[in-house]
Length: 99
Image 1 (tube, rainbow, N blue to C red):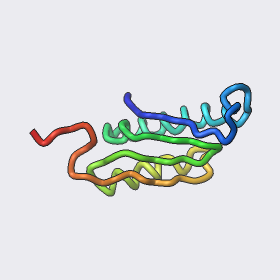
Image 2: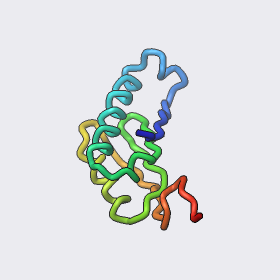
Image 3: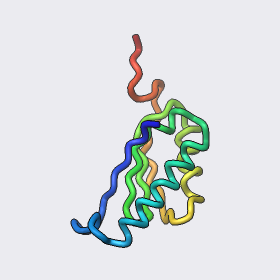
């Protein structure tokens, strides 16, 4: 699985003992498991950025259906407060060539 993940802590010390950071790590794992369980390989290449329950999705998928599927898969995950879906719909998934 090659899902890119990042954290955007509000305070520079968040990685060193902030309980919100620990919660985000657990929440991120739940989000990644949910995306993987959908079974669409295109969703595994998405970038998931998480900050205190707010999820930012970025990447490319070949259809609006998959863009919406990513969002609707994440919304019911316990702890997700909001989803910003910046996924781009393209004719080819990211990382593939036309050759």
